[in-house]
Length: 143
Image 1 (cartoon, helix red, strand yellow):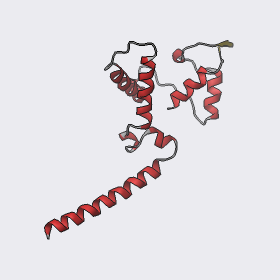
Image 2 (cartoon, helix red, strand yellow):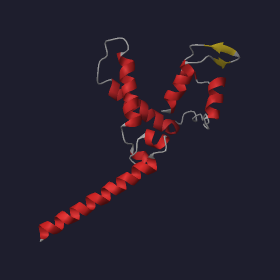
Image 3 (cartoon, one colour):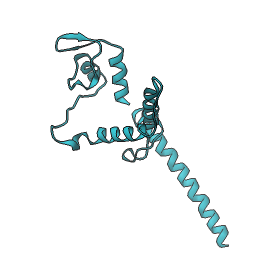
Image 4 (cartoon, helix red, strand yellow):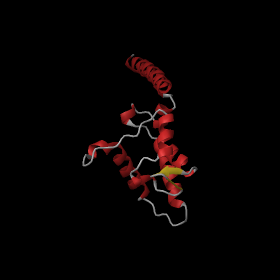
């Protein structure tokens, strides 16, 4: 989710790197650019670099890339823009529909937008109602 926000920011702006303006630098240059750094700081985020030769540090993003790659490689995209659409669809599914075990079976969007407590509360209510119905059915069946 945050990578999409940063990408949108970078797409719509000119930013500074090494004292000069560049328009089409790839995001993966390895440098934190001046304008995006200020934007991240304004959003309350901090750029953190992983330790060299320490893949565990990048475990979450590596897992995300693996999941994306496996999903995208299932289909062949022949039309211009089809790959971008497939990636956009994957990101939408990953952030808004897919429940993540590491987030308490919530979606990243639920956590990011502060809906986690509401979702978990609703789940507890549904679970309690389901358990009451099961008990009632079991009591009726036993009688």
